[in-house]
Amino acid sequence: MEHEGPIVGVGAVVMREDNHLLMVRRGKEPAKGLWSLPGGRLEHGEYIAGAVAREVKEETGLEVEVGRLAGIFEVPGDQHYVILDFIAEVEGRPEPRAGQDADEARWVAFDDIEKLECTPRLVETLTAWSVLASAGEESD
Image 1 (cartoon, one colour):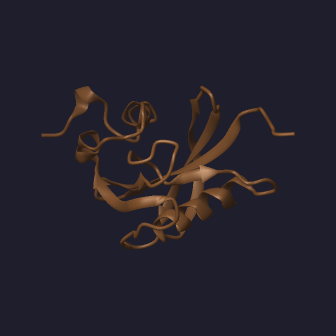
Image 2 (tube, rainbow, N blue to C red; image 1 turned 180 degrees about the horizontal axis):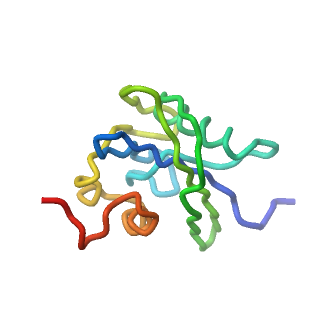
């Protein structure tokens, strides 16, 4: 019998010191073609931090150290997702390459994120979590 409860997902908020965020354009549903944080489903028996690191590696080729919880993002609907997003760090300034489940992976300047076609509420959520400056605090 199929489990009918929410699906637990994980994501990574990976930032560089020069105000760039690691982002992927999703290659599969849900949200195919939209830009988002690297991430995916937590697999049965997997530790959360391990899932975050695995998803980043699969989608961008980068290895990260997983840190604190940035926030929880919920997507109710026909398929209910509860997504735990974590701050993660990458050593140096490696260039990402799109991998499994991603059509494209790249560093995006904070100021350019709103110009991308992102998953619903991504910009608002990152702003609420103080990852991005709020609309009233835009830089010159």
